[in-house]
Amino acid sequence: MIDSHCHLDYCEPPAAELVGRARAAGVTRLATVGTDGERIRHSLAAAEDHDEVVAIVGRHPHETAGFDELALEEIEHAAAHPRARAIGETGLDYYRDHAPRDDQRRAFELQLELAARAGLPVVIHSRAAEDDTFAILREHAASVPVVVMHCFSAPDRLDECVERGYMCSFAGNVTYPKATDLQEAARRVPGELLLVETDSPYLSPQPVRGKPNEPANVVHTARFVADLRGEPYEELERAVETNFERVFGP
Ligand SMILES: [Zn+2]
Image 1 (cartoon, rainbow, N blue to C red):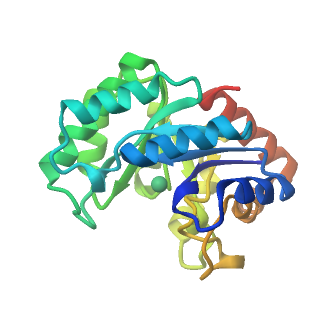
Image 2: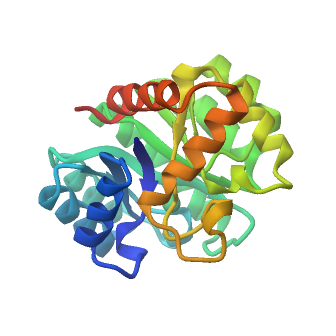
């Protein structure tokens, strides 16, 4: 199994322990996200230390106040590292509004352009901002090799995602009893666009809800999604592992 999106540095246990527990649960590859300067270095170090780990490097929308040329250069430099396999997470968060929206949009567009230049996939965070997120993607992501919708949360735009070939990565919240729209999206999304993730330490899936999340728990989400789709777990596992390798490399 794979975990397409986690934050090893936000989790309390050390990375080595989390990776070990993931491996014991059958999770053989995971992508950890560096959301600003210091955290980018942490994600690259984790990816250097563990064969199972690759890094996603970028500036989270929460951290984009005053985003400038220097911030972009820092990401561009990190993206040249052989263990950096995607730019992100970038996008828009109008729910928390931690950074001015103009700054969020500028950082988003610049990181999409960087992903295109670097030939890397981009990992998208979008919360309460779907109209602007999809408009900016339409305008600026045409030359980006792959778009990954992290913590997929736009079930009413699933058809648009499928049409554009965006990867849809489902997190633990798809397992919550009230998430029927998300569950319907996870049932309908074509297998070649499906990914699963933990977003650790957030969004623990239902069986471990209320506890801090960690990459090992992605198997709960994967099992739930396999059941939704009426597929054997092993079949879904093969599909998401193949997808992960296609997006993030071997
Ligand atoms: Zn994240």
